[in-house]
Length: 266
Length: 306
Image (cartoon, rainbow over all chains, first blue to last red; front, side):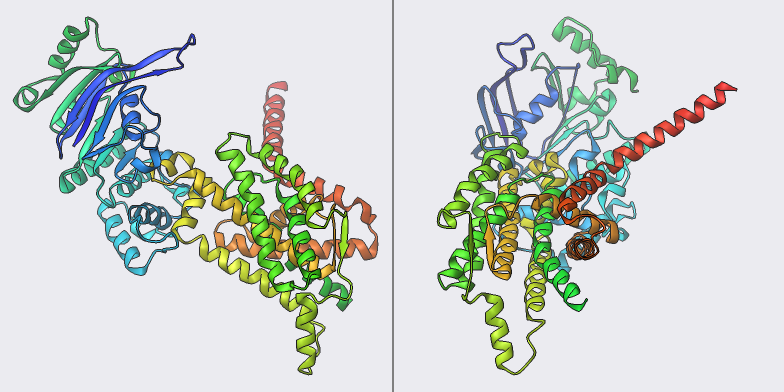
C-alpha cells in the first residue's frame, strides 16, 4: 500500500542549523494497517508524515502509494488521496467559511473530474447533515455558521470528517488530539477509531501517549534520530506494556526516551 | 439636485466594480493588489481606443481581458517568482504606465467626440422608442454592476470559488485539501483585475475621455468604498460583502458630491481626506487595542497611587 524506501531529508544543509531529520528510513504498510508512531522530541515523526504528505521533497529515496510513485508529486496532488490532520485544530478548516462550505470544499475536491463550477446540491447538504449527525456534537443544526465559532474539539472533529468524507487511501494523523482538552481528545480519538475501522483506512498516527500507542491500531513504530528503532505488531505487541516499550527503546538507542509531553501524560 | 443625485448614483455604480475587485483581492484572498491603479486606466484606455475605432461593445470584454492579463502578471510574479505580493502589484503597475500610453496611441489622454458609446447607443435606442432617456446612463451602470455582483456571488459558491475563499482564509488547509494555491491566487487576481478594468472601461465610455493619470488613488478610493459599505452592512457573509461594495461606493459618491457642491472641504483636498479616512479605518483595531491598554494601565496606576 504505502512503500517508503530509504528516504533521507536534511534541513538547512550547509548551515549551523543543519539537521538530518530522516536518515535512510524504510517502511512498508499493508492496506488497512493502522500504525501508531512514538518517539523522542525531534526523532523525525512529524517529518516522516510531512515527507509522505509532500510538504517537502525528500533528498533521496522513493515513496510509493498504491501503485503510484509519488516521490516528486506536489503536495496538493497527493492530498487528493491522502487525508491529513494536524496537531493545531485551527489548521484544518477555513474559519470565515461556514461548516457547510468547508464540507463542500472537501467533498467537491475529491470529485475532481467534475467541473470547477460545480456547486453544493440539496442532496449533498442532506448527506453532510447525516455525516455531521454521526459526530454527535449538534453541528448538523449549525451548518450555516462560520467554523471560527466552533471549539477546538469541534473543529478537529469536523476536520476528521472532511478528511474522510470520501475515503482516502491513506490517513495521516499528527498528534491530532494533543492540543485538545481531555474530554474533547477522547471524543475525537473515539471518532477516529470508528471511522478508520468502518472504512478500513490505512493510517499513520503520531502520538505522545504510550498506552494509546499500544492499544490503538495494529502496529507500533518507535522512532529515534530520523530512523525506526522498533517495529512491533501482532502477539508481541499485544503482550507489551508501557514499561516494556521504554526498556526496548533504551536497548535500541542506548538512552532513555525523552519527550517532554510524553512524560507528562499518563 | 436631481442631477447631482443621478450623477452620484451613476458614478457610484460604475466605481463599485473597483471596490468589488478589492473585495475579492483584499478581503477574500487577503492580498493588497496594487495593480488596481494602472489596471483601471488600462481598462479605460482599451475601451476608449476601441470605441473610437467604432467597437463600443467589443471594447468592454476586450478591456476585461486586458485587465485579466495584468492580474495574471501580478499573480505570476508573486506565486511563481517569489516577489512579495505588494511589490508585485507595484511592479506591474509601473509597467502598465507604458502599456497604457501605448493603448492610447502614445498620447497621455484621449477623448471620444462625436463617437457612439454604449451609453449614447442605449439612449438613442430608448429615445427612438419615444421614452425619456434621462435615466439611461444610470440604468446601464446599475445593470452592469449588479450583474457583475450576481455573477461574482454565484462564482464564489462554486468549487473553484470556495477554493479561492479558502486560500485567503487558511493557506495551511488548502494544500492539505488538494487545492493548488498558485492556481487559485492566479484565478482570483485575474478576475479582480478584470473587474477593475471593466470599471475603467465603463467610466471611460461614460466620461468619453481617458487620461493616463485617471487611476491615481483608485485603489484607496475603492478601499474606502469597501470599508464604508462594510461599516453600514457588516462583513459576515459573501452576499453582504458584494452588496456592501455597491452601497459603500454610492455613499462615497454622495459624500463627494456634497463636498463638491457645498465646498466644506476644498475638492482638491478630497484625496488626502480619503487617504486619512482609509488609513484610520484600517488602523481602527490597533488603535482600539492601544486605547484599551492605556485605560487599563491608567486604572491600575490609580489604584496603586492612593
